[in-house]
Image (cartoon, rainbow, N blue to C red):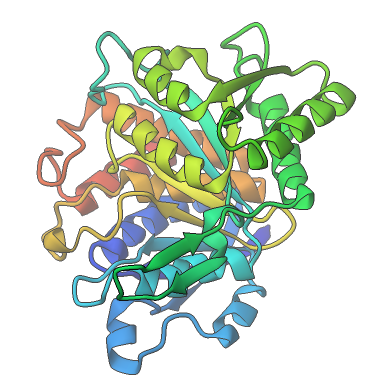
Length: 361
């Protein structure tokens, strides 16, 4: 029986509540599919920062390297200035653990309301591969003449060929294994590069050249498309069925995945993975800590459950991951009244129970 060591950070606000439900479902999958997890809790987040002034120390990074994966609830505290926890915990973990892929499925599940007219699960079904360690997020830049009328702020978007190539490699491999043809939903697997070659003529020229060079040489069976990011946003709303797998840089990926989240039913169902294919990855619900709902038992745990499902898939537990996804689809289609906090028709723990029961059956 294979055993996985999982670091668990419940984090802030409703994060611990949804993480408990994700673990509940994971334990149901363990019992059915014959693997085990050893969980270690870490209390990094707003409350610890308020007590100690500490975000994520270097010692924690070294400890995380001993785990197979990290399951995160949420980071963000109303009493802590925005940016401190996000940079000090989330970005630090992503960069220090070289989690260079942010993987974001945009899939509308049965029964989940979609704000797009006449669009359903068959149309909203694609994945965004976002490069996760470069771009404007590297911190390159600064101020001159700060707090004067002539103040200048510079924040540079930076990429090297190594970063671009390894992200593209992951995206091509993902499209090969999980594209629409691989899932029996289309005639070909397609990888679309999202950029802005008409304005960002250095960075996305690099991305586009690398994209076509790798595709022609190593993945001739995968169709290659290119989309300007602004056009991508329009077609994500008008014709999401056009997309299969998208790959893009950090900043554009950050923006379009939030747009994708609302088309799949909102932050209560959206999950993501910060992935190092050769190291330790971290999985999280996208919706944030939602502090106003803390302790009320009304927050939707499905995004956290789906994040855990992505974790198991990345670890190689494909059968368990598939069963969990099917269980979530069953619950959204047949049980829940809505996705919003307090409007699900069930409490947070009851939704976890529904999914766990379906996994166990």
